Image 1 (cartoon, rainbow, N blue to C red):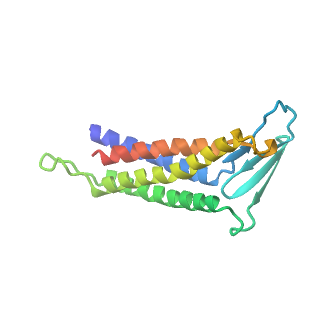
Image 2: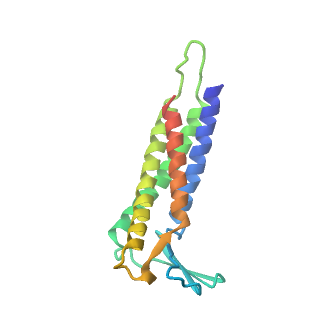
Amino acid sequence: MACCVLQITGLIFGGVGMVGTLAATVMPQWRVSAYIDGNIVVFETIWEGLWMDCISQLGIRLQCKFYDSVLALPPPLEAFRALMCIAVVLSIISFLMAIVGVKYTHRTKEDAQGISIFILAAGVAFLLTGILVLIPVSWTGGSIIHDFYDPKVPVPLKRELGAALYVGWVSTALLIVAGAMYCSF
């Protein structure tokens, strides 16, 4: 019975991690404009994401623009896009494997180790997905923090950690926990 509870819990964690991975991938709030130097009059909020930039004016009007050219993007952004897209696809595959594994797991008195190979495969895939999400999210977070404290970066170009990074970190944790749960069977 405890086995089934752990499998269902892993399935829930993996499912929420999958949705979070998709959300972090499409959200434009990876980098958010920073308000520093006592400037309390703010007319624009700038969001920078993997796919688009958005400007919110006075919190009333939101205008987003997709990046024009793939060739004009910085190489790290291209790599982060690729890693996050692979992570989304792999998280969906992992979740489907986990569903199949939970459904077809048979434990009997004769075969106490009757865990489906799908459970182990889903666990490894969830772990790999968590790592794939962790790399671009943490790298971007580190870059934002480095630039924020760099005196050479002009104040208007300084950014803060956006909501997508926090969603990515939570998704990473859930995916790694789900993967560890499935690999422990």
